[in-house]
Image (cartoon, protein in one colour):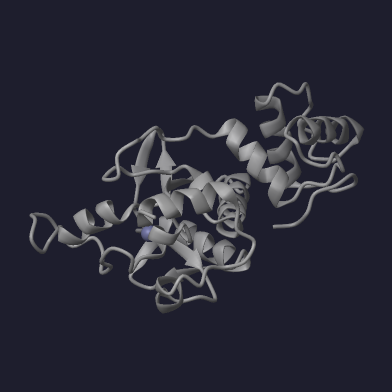
Length: 229
Ligand SMILES: [Zn+2]
């Protein structure tokens, strides 16, 4: 995803302006990163605790996401969660950029699931094995990147309904998801359409506690609570 700053133009700028309007800034959707847009961005950054430099990258998009996307409220460890703050910051930023870029192209993906507790992984693994239903995962607890906050699932949300449809023209929407994901350092698994995970590590490394650099407290605290230390 390109950095946006004063002088940028195009559909991503229109999308940013639309989001800023949602955040109560009074802006015209000009598609040009003009003076009023710069002022709105700088004000929003400052109020979000960021450096008010007027340059829109991962940190600013993450705050825009947090301010405009509804988080699913779930508390149990068997529940599906989509709280991006439980993702590792590198994956969190990448996932936000993927969703924002897709939405700016009018491809309505949302983050369906982010962190997944081992209890839920075990429950999903049982489906189609020791419980009824079809198999939905090959991964046992702690064998999925979801348990380390390093994966997210992206699903189309069309008229308020989740859609996994990849037939006909929809095929290209999923291709675009995978393409943008790869640009942001997230790789797909060839047997699972909605899933993107951090490239460049392995389950063996993660099981050994070798985590990616640049961690933060919200990711780390959640992970340690899931491990039970
Ligand atoms: Zn997944």
